[in-house]
Image (cartoon, rainbow, N blue to C red; front, side, top):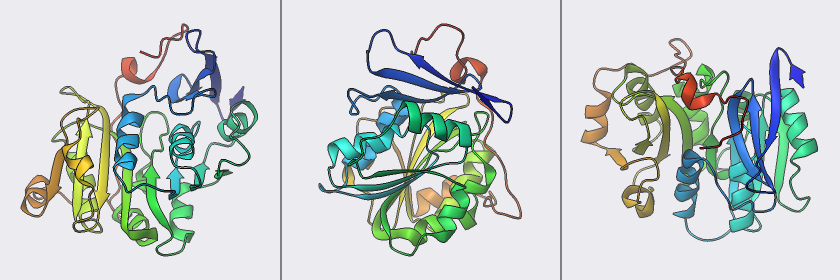
Length: 272
């Protein structure tokens, strides 16, 4: 199955009858368990789910920029019935295959949509959602237009005052890219928590961002699936950014490419 030069694959997990690994050009996109949507294989998805779990109980309105297999959306639908979720995927063939081979339940409240994530952020109305999730990758890297201060301003605009922005990016600790991204986030968001598994190199980094005094305590003091949470606010946020210039439309930057062994898979499926 190929589209615009990219191979989309679904690999069955022999150890979990309902488990599927979704690949795009051999790059891990999602792991979906159709029999148990509460099962989360990837640590970064567990970290995103932990942030959502820290919010007050009840259904949520959520926008996911970057669809993949809609793993987090399925988890939210299962753990917070009645939630309304829009999942936007820009890759047409991947979107088609997920709809056909990994369908969501008709009454799940999940709307799988093919489209441009940046355009969706710009078009949604103010104060419309509780959570915005940016988890979009192309070739293992985050598209630059989703990490600019302009895009993040739109994410803040469509969030309700108590809403959370959740991001999954690839970055190295203390890197120029990360400082520039945090600088862009620091404009619309007053409080951030970083949690990563870089181990001294490039790896997944989950960012939770909120308005003043809106970060749930559980996000700040959680057990840290990817590592110890690093809260940034006020002086600590300014110190982390330093002299870094915010990512912007005029000065964009894509995330670094992670090492092959951490994001591509071989012929044999081994999710670990």
